[in-house]
Image (tube, rainbow, N blue to C red; front, side, top):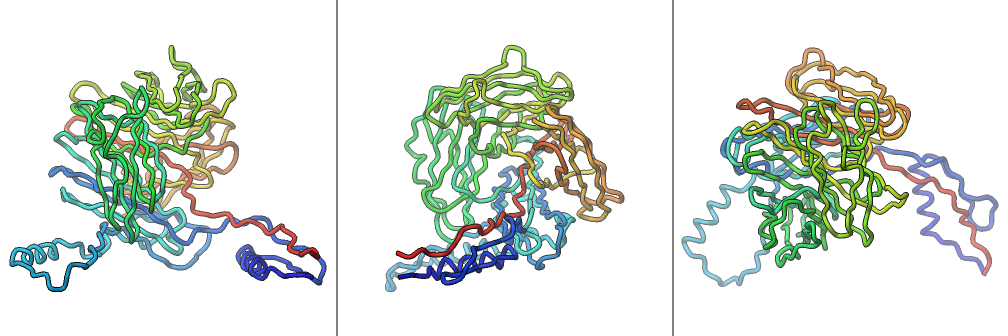
Length: 514
């Protein structure tokens, strides 16, 4: 007796329609399923989440949305960032419950404050950024979706300038995709630091998250870090120091979700130094690359964590202009399992731009996560930024909100020499895109000042596309002078994941006799 798996055949036919070619022979005939090699197709939908920018009354925030020009047309689509808009609570109160005059007044006031659902920023064109500004101290988190031809490679940048106060600094962050697992080495619960984990839920149902903290001696006790509810389409900031009674200068924060998904990012403010966003590290891996340490960094601190059950011993190398070298006295770092390790590398770049590579010393692949705390300037003119470990650019990556002055791109080839095309987009208010190809020698870091688009008006975006050679890691540093302080922020450029691989059909679907 023979049986035909109809659902499986239907799946193969659907897959064939996507990949472009398949030959299917069902039982009773001859032949096997054949298909073209796996195809990479543009994604049709992207999601991004931007945290609430600042509570400072003197802060100004710029949002920039950008999708690089694609290789084909695709459907028109849309890309919008809207205020996080909590869904109303279930109206399950008893029908005969009376409302007081105060309740009615509160309801009217809440209705007046409710977001109108209009986008804060809408992107219309490929290859040309759109911008929006706000100076509101209660500006909300944003939830965004891009569809159609605007989805592949969509990126958004949030840049806040706070000229004074405890949160003084240039705070920049690339808006993140929702996920269920995030690592943040480099946070702190110590005196003089005010670090918040911002959790943003883009979905129509509540998410439940857990926050674990790890210091130099292991897990920090926390009675309130479990089961944190993030309401639908809402954002919740959690002051890290309130999650534990233990003060620790270097802390690794681990955010996971039990249900749902969130966007997560840490805001870090340090008394008399500055403030910035700390983005999540790349997923745990045996080798990590941290690109884009400025040439004039006066202090660099490496913070690393081994989340598995085994200790990690890593080689620490600076990839500079001429090749790799080991920092004096810090050629290796021992990272105990479940404990946060840190080392002050001081002015490790010594006047030259560089990137850090962590790799196993003994050939093992014990996974680690890592980040850098970088300070520029001295005394009252200090400013801080953070550089998390990041994955390679892959096929393409972009960073938005570049200015006519103050934007610097760092390209690192940790392995083989690579050829890299860098495209500066048209400006948000006008100008023509320009592109240039660079050769990044293996084991080195190249710092470039991008060519500003001709006739530039407004800001522009940078797109990095490796053309040949080994993998490339990239970071953009944006510097703005404010009150005599060179405020700066660094954003890494991992693969934009604008394409998804559709596997080829190779399995023989003929069914043998029982």
